[in-house]
Image (cartoon, rainbow, N blue to C red; front, top):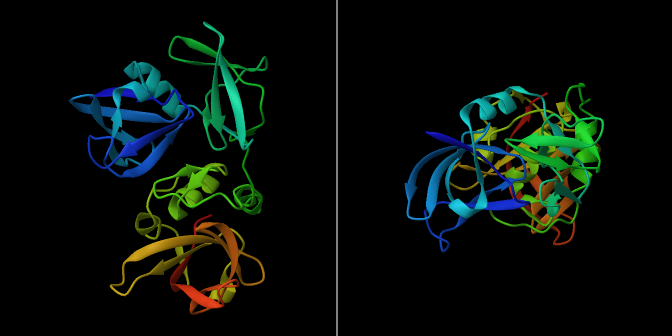
Length: 260
């Protein structure tokens, strides 16, 4: 096994080792991976810390030493909070665009950080996870993604799916969630009634077979913010999500969970 880090703004991770295979998730700048066997120009990886297994092109990440990987994994990161920003690689002055939710480790007072042997400069806004983030901050983080277009496997303000949206909002609050909605539904405390839900709690929705297929973040006054076509706000009741534009229920409520 080897180790790596995403050194691009976003790297597509696919179900199979092919550019034609579906994108199942994305890596954002600074996110760590465990790297397994190679298949032509592709590597099978597990994203960290959620352990999501997928394939990534060898040109879209950078190998790092095992000791660097474990050092970074143990450190408390800064999470970028600007919708879009840039980092500058000091060695060659190359600019790398990054998006909200990217990871920066050990940012110094002079705006520099290291990944392996490379030194980078970053002067944008960050969330310092060394300080406890209040639950109410989840709403503010979520609203930053409003109107981001829906994209299967997406994890950025320029394309995001329902569980990627929830995962990133919680990441910005220092909470690591699994990647998929069905996995996210297995953690936390189940609430008995929708009236018990607080802002920031998660609502899960199922299909006719009973499989969890959708997730959103509860807001006050029986509203929910979720990614469906775009990141949007709709009404929610004991039946599910009521789309205020189509005047129809779009998702059937299965359960509500309190995570933090």
